[in-house]
Length: 191
Image 1 (cartoon, rainbow, N blue to C red):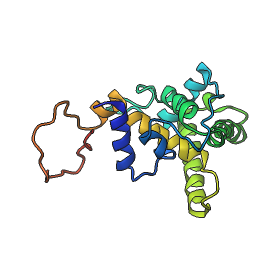
Image 2: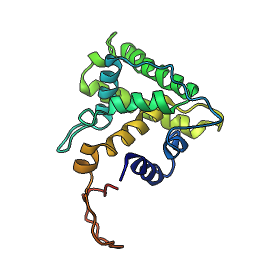
Image 3: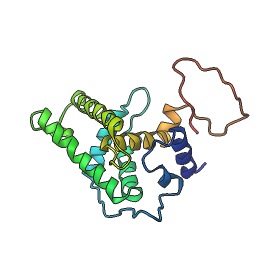
């Protein structure tokens, strides 16, 4: 299975909730919207996004988002697949996380605060984005944290560590079993 098939299936499994799902299904091409290519991310930006993603999916008995290089994945997706409007939302959101961190934690940017403080900050942003989703109109921009969470999940579960260690993975599946008993705590299947 190639990466495009995997992305298509993940987008369908998530119920089409991934922002820009049409880009994933069409190979990141769009004839009616200009996809912005003017965004440049630095190594510091990638490290920053890795830490945001690691706070969302931390390492436990399975690798976390940083091990799956989700920060690099996010930068590629934002640069190559998001239109200029959503790129701006994403970049403004990166700045907002640092601003909120400085306000809440004595002038310290996100990279300088503790993992517990990071979790606290991102939990508050998650509540904010859920409220935004309840009250937004169709023409409103998506909340930046929604974009970050979706890219984190997509990047992690389509990566080798995410698919093979966090999910149940069978490299060459056998016969089709329509009903498989589920035991509490079982991992989901990787596609």
